[in-house]
Length: 111
Image (cartoon, rainbow, N blue to C red):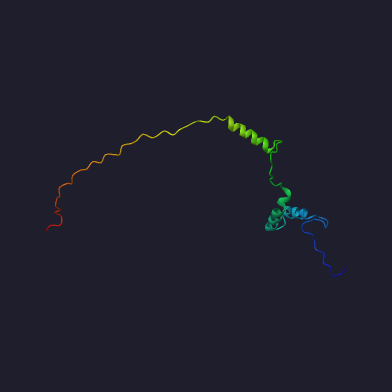
């Protein structure tokens, strides 16, 4: 095959390697530039660490059973017959009316 240029494989994975294998080989290779290793590590994270999942607690009780139990709890509850207490009536404050003070002429402006 003349004219074909054989390129050396810088990361050392074979032609049958999967995409994840290539990413792992890139971010583990210290000869690769840091930005390329970081991008490969970011792309490989979802396949290497499990994601958090939602878990639910499932019981064999139906909704009707839960509602009946809540209904009986409310019927057993003691009802407090509370009536509001009227606040004591306050007398309005007494206003003291004082006579006017005698007028004292202001002597500051006299000459």
